[in-house]
Image (tube, rainbow, N blue to C red; front, side):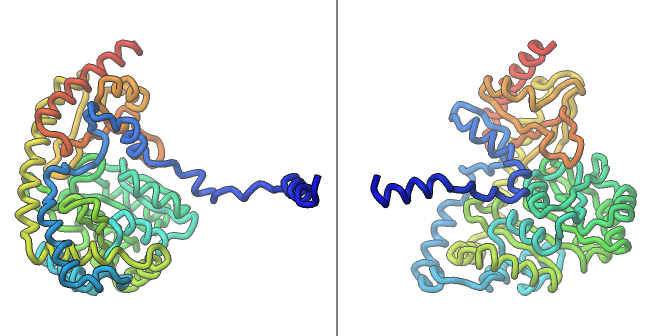
Length: 413
């Protein structure tokens, strides 16, 4: 054996194991929604599981024209680094849209993020120490639970009802748990589709103002209203104005592939989020921001959203029309006034996680409700997305869902 071979053998003999990933990376699971999408990627599967906007409704021509114009007219700027806070033209346009919807906003109030999911991560970094308490709805948007879990937070669900968070229960938890923030999706909630009424929002704002609590108000779906009157943001109520962070996104109204979101926050917290963003990705892609700003200048986004909402309403109605035949007796479900989701509760003996493999064999899928809960889940619940398929596809998917549930029930009886 040569000297080199001896050295290699000695090195191999003393090679030590590598340090493990951080405990938070080992303890926070992946997204069950993403896992289900991977399993159900076959084209024959009618997938009610994903929260995917309908791709045939994207204004692909308008978006492509915006990119062409930006790259033709300002290529050096579009392909260059940008400021962390976001392109001024886009921030001004976002501020104008927010102001027009009843919340006076200046461009300097806005931080552009790489999707509103990044905004959640930035807020978790800027606000939370390991062990801090976060209050959430029951059930809650799954990726928010992941973001707060990665920050090391203790996540506690606030009791509520069909109108959302119970303000009395919220105040009791604030007094007892001393949380840093409350996270809520009050308009067309993910996963339930429910909307918190104005009086309930005012009560939540009053609790936050009196007890000292940040509110993170996530509003990715609010423009997708099919019926009823728009409800003001919690951020617009007097007690919450200096302590509410409003999040939104182009993912549901323009296209998710742009990865463009934003947060509106008080100055000190917004600056802290900007520092966190500098450490994360420096800035959101310049060309995407400029293309979005150009689209807003040249096209009528409100008219596009109205067309999308009309199509989504027809799809919601198709799902509502078929649920009674598809679901077992005793099931209940929400009737959302907009958004993308509705929430189902099967009779108490059902476990939707255990039933899912049997249902998927019928080439249809849903998301079990259990992962959306902080604490003890309601295992009889499930989420259905009604926007990705056409009304005819929804009818066929519900037929398959009914067959799958009936077959699974017979096997477990």
